[in-house]
Image 1 (cartoon, rainbow, N blue to C red):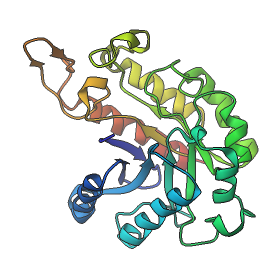
Image 2 (cartoon, rainbow, N blue to C red; image 1 turned 135 degrees about the vertical axis):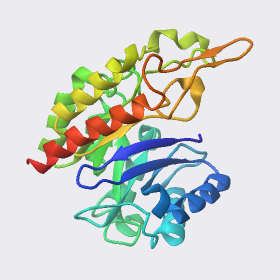
Image 3 (cartoon, helix red, strand yellow; image 1 turned 180 degrees about the horizontal axis):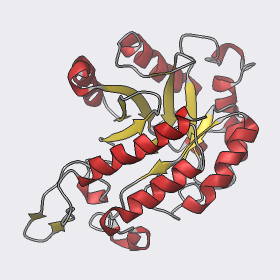
Length: 276
């Protein structure tokens, strides 16, 4: 998968970009992005997607590659206070628990990354309620919800975020809710209309952000792709009509409407964190 998502840390003015990793081509794009860091004012962390034979050995290989190639770059995001990079692990539940324990456990043996140069803050995906116990038991450092469609999964259901945040605090791990401006992928998944979420001229985005802030999470991520066929873009947009499709635009708001909303709510979140 190829795209960018914003992940905003409240204690700095920088915008952290999640680059979705799936090929060497994306790594090359990332390197160009890192080299332009002073212009873009971004830092980068990694969203590791499923791939064939994803296991302890292959994930360690991924981490080693990332750290060796990018670890010393100033745009490689390390969480303040820990100096550890942050890794989002998509569909983490597809890897058996014993594999994660071997990799992430403090006593995981020779395969554990803890206390090594490959150590990091590893966030697993909570989609189903049962994933909570699995992620905690498998020594993940926290969990995120990813999906931009409210009620699509247990984790993406906004009304569950307060309890998800509480469970994380009780377990001493991080909670990272994921907000989105809306969702509409029926052009490529015509069977998925039930999960379409109308933007409502920004109201959907603001409702999600408000719920995220109210849950008092550790971080908030924005699931926003430049894949317009999923309808989660927040980049500047103007009306566009093809022969068979009209892309959603932001009229009557300005073309940068969702960027302004993102800044508004990250500022609210920053104020909350600064007051704690």
